[in-house]
Image (cartoon, rainbow, N blue to C red; front, side, top):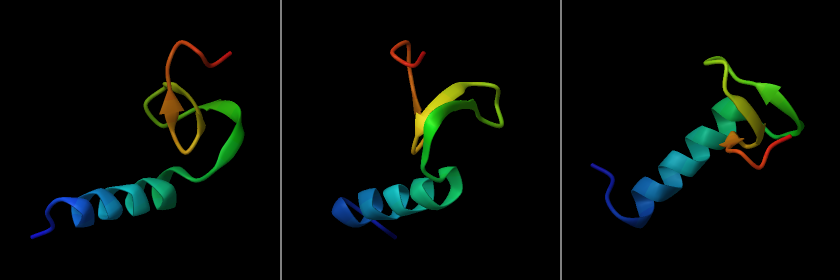
Length: 45
C-alpha cells in the first residue's frame, strides 16, 4: 500500500502518463477544457 510521498509520486506519474503534455487547450475525454498535464479551470482560454 502506497502512503504519503510514494502515493503522491504514483499519482503524478499516472497523471503524466495518461494525460500527456499539451500546450494548447483541448477538451479531454469528459468534455472538460484542459491544458498542460490536465490542468482545468476558468483561467484557460
